[in-house]
Amino acid sequence: MRIDVMTLFPDFIAQAAAVGVVGRAQERGLLSLHGWNPRDYASGGYRRVDDRPFGGGPGMVMMVEPLLACLTAVRGADPAPAPVIYMSPQGAPLTQKKARELAALPRMILLCGRYEGVDERFLKAHVDEELSIGDYVLSGGELAAAVVIDAVGRLQDGALNDADSAVQDSFEGDGLLDCPHFTHPSSHPLGDVPAVLRSGDHAAIARWRRQQSLGRTARRRPDLLDEGSLSKADKALLTAFRDQETGEGGAG
Ligand code: 9D3
Image (cartoon, rainbow, N blue to C red; front, side, top):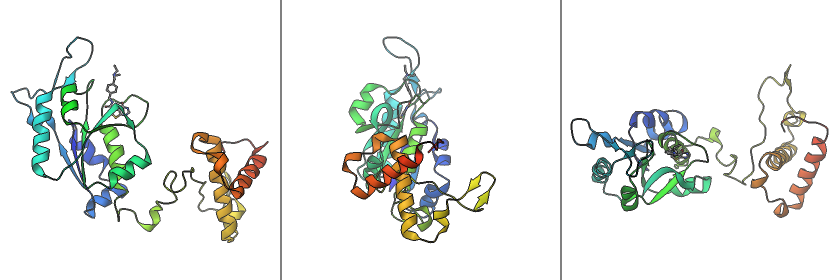
């Protein structure tokens, strides 16, 4: 997949996507990332990309012309069709489902805003969709674009090694939160590893993990769990989890 990013801070995007699974996906040629700076397409000695808002008020607005010239260059570099996605607090929330849909595209163009945002005329003419990464205020679209690139990049075929366990991840398999994980040493002043995980009984281990996933999801993210549609076995695991929990306390 090819991802073009229109941003006043292309270095930030490159750095954020250079590490870990997504960095490796780029090295493997599964993902190609291209940064484009609207400032490079701005006219005049000052290379202005923003101006004051009509109607007054605080902040600045990104101007149409540098964005148009930048987008023309992006389209010219590769004529393959690609949606323009504007990272915006007004966008639809990013979900794992959305990440899967985007990951299946051959190409997309991400637009990052700074200041108060982008002149509405550019958005209306050239933006296909708007995406938000959550209900909190960022200083610009770059961090949000980096999140999209990470979520989408790791879904490229061949990006994950066996050790990266895509299917076990929350939201990817059954929509439950992950179970707790432990490694050596088995005994430590902070506590012992649950005996079941050292038992070698793979069915019991799978049952315990399922129970922890169900219990944590019920406790921490009840919005993700439709208890009514759980299997009888899952309901029993969850009931037992709640019974154990009573009086135990802790973060669950
Ligand atoms: C007057 C209110 N404005 C500033 C406090 C609104 C505003 C403008 C620009 C709020 C945030 C931003 C910059 N944010 C993004 O570009 C952004 C974003 C976000 O802030 N939260 C979640 N997802 C995203 S995607 C892009």
